[in-house]
Image (cartoon, rainbow, N blue to C red; front, side, top):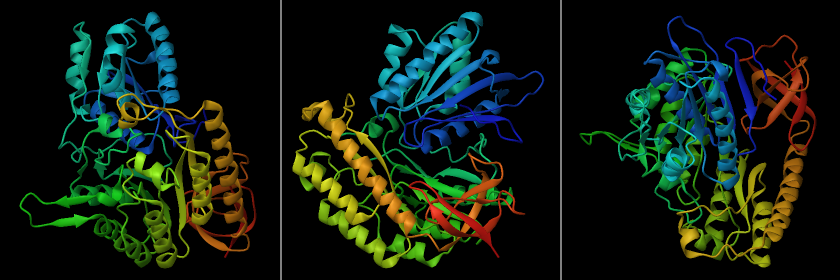
Length: 473
């Protein structure tokens, strides 16, 4: 169910996809057209939607929450798993019903599904009028003009240069406290199960100066936390055109942290092959760089990792975990885990369970393997693990993570944490919630605090997902 927030009116609906979100922001302005925008999938998709909103605002469009009033309806899509695509198709059917009542409504698919399914969506199924890939959002005004002339429009060309560094995102929804900042686009890793290199193109890093300026602007506008986003942030590397500057990810982290000690800095996602001790030491040097690393393992078995083309083995991964524990003793580690990848044996599945225990994840995103057309795995390997075996293994992974999460939270009972107040608790208007540096959600009585403040909270008890405590002086 959508939840209403004060201030600008927007809906936020949790989707079962990783960090899946549907966001719209209502605004009205005389003489302007209305755009309805939904976003599914990862944080990168949500960040892209803010870029789209900015481009559309420059072309006389304002966002709306009322689908039936929209002149343009966009759905920003995810192709990571099959059920994500099915959800999008379901929504497109709903949009088509609205279009019957308002024939001049334009329906467009944006993002990761665009390149792969452009022909089906436009020509075979005729579900949409417009298909736009992640690197072509600046072409939206031209494409909309083409649709208005009676022609379907498509641009799914991938770029080796586009980073949208010159676009100031329109912050959709949110609470004015937390913001995402994209620092790079695309991916060069070519994991055999993943469609991202095909849907988002080659890896390229954004101008470091534009990142710093965006973060500084957010701080000056009252935001208290930024999350630096990339498919693989640890491989970020900016080189000035004249070669006078080189900035790696550790250096970028420090530059953002130096904007102000009151600005919290998070980042996602790290790749085990690239995360360096330099990054870890930088995190240790700055109190406001949050002590949480998302380090996807995918599998705990070296042979499976090789088939996945992850370019590290079990020993390398555990070495990185050891380095995190040594340099950042209070750092939380979260992960992604895939059950039932091609050829996975029961013994190899047990290796995944054991590496989860050795790593002590506070939280994980856990999935059954879903073959994606066009990937190396789809071309090279047989999806030979029976569905019922995948389901059973996934449930064992989920059950173990539940135990690890509860154990981690129990160890925090009695401790006092600095918490950034994000807003009211979902379950009680008398309580606020916010996260500590380790990205754990803490719920506590409101007292005299307000959203956007840093407060001290002593943890009194916990659940598997949440810490519960009281304010302390």
